[in-house]
Length: 384
Image (cartoon, rainbow, N blue to C red):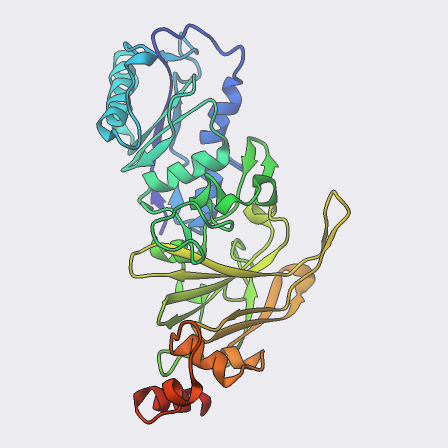
């Protein structure tokens, strides 16, 4: 069932900014939030939710036909704004100023579900609780992330390699739209009608929002809770609106719930290479990027050829993902999910170090092969 949510998009300026729309294309700004059949805010969240979020009731103000098609002018100067990540009240003050000015201009702001405050000068960029603040310096990718926060997706995405507490580290998720884990933006996004656009939302967050229906999931068994049963899965691209196959392979291992997804085309067409992407969804309710297998060949501007990969290996989680084939002219991918040993010859010492969490030099005889639970654990692993 589609969830309708409408934003009042308030085009605002501070009282000491007297510019018109000479340097800003008003139609482009309005269309970015409200135009039908465009790759904009409405289309992105429709696609990420597979049609379950409908923002088509959003309207920009001053509206077409108004006597003043310029900006809504706030009573405050830019120097009055003190909001920041450390000053949430200052940020809320700006929203309240904008709504007050809008009411004074006969804008029915309270009849909408949420509000976007679009400032004419560099001001701030944030979202949450049905509210978004952005400005003329923000690109569509950044705005899409903030709208995600406004719709209830409170967390950014992270990376296993960076650990807890470090946000914006996932190169395959819009909720890392500020840095994408320091991957060059041009390797992740594409230039659309409204500038920098994409990529899509990662599968763990699509599931978190309740949009990843059961027919879009391939459940992989892990009978002992530690090792996935060898399973071949055919995946359609995560952004496919009408997939012929599941779009995420899902299973639980000790680090968290794993999502293996195929990213290609659509809002992901800016990715340097299409890829099988592995994510974890952990108890802290954050999505963590774990790794990827490139699936396409790309020649870089410098003449370097980037080839497809073949495997993803995580000894710590005893997990392997193998790319078997790309089918249907790139629309689907066949993968195998299994224990780590399925794709690599692993020594007893490697197993002991990874599974038993042994650090530094150690003795196989004294620390691993002596009697007791450590030995039994190792023998159980090798017997699988």
